[in-house]
Length: 216
Image 1 (cartoon, rainbow, N blue to C red):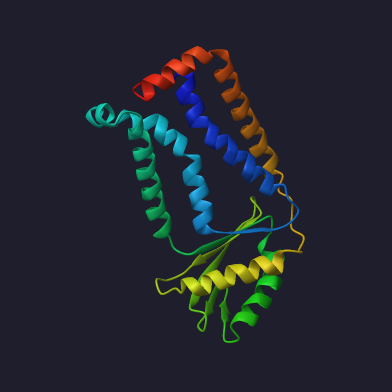
Image 2: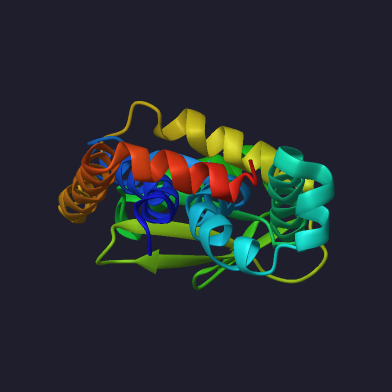
């Protein structure tokens, strides 16, 4: 793989690792939706898609006719496919830097405030008035907790309300710093250093490869 394609592939992943590592090293719980979590991952691997299958299967006739504009079109198509895949996912809430034992008291308070008729059954929760059914999945080594939709009948408005309440409740709470975040940051810095090295090693070759890629 030439330096240009290597940088295109590794650049977004390096940023993703640095961002995820900084989140895991925080002492506070971080709450996000499964949609945003999956979208961030999709953007991170987007560089591999551009440098690999997107260029490999790029129609040459379209590239000749559209010129430089063929790449924005292909990238827009990838973003649309990613958006569709994300929207078809089951609702999910991801909570970083907390164990289930730390989360459960706060989650129980939130659930009781939102729906007094809510019922627990082991790690499963039903909130009939909110239209939410979920299971709690704990990732002990990662110190993350997932609230995953159980069943097809779900209220997206209810999930949004639940996410907002959990975020507000955990805003001032103390979580558990995850040492795994340091590994992510180290990998991210290593990838970023590789990108800078390859770009600075042969800038003329990179510029030539870019012109060829853009069909200039």
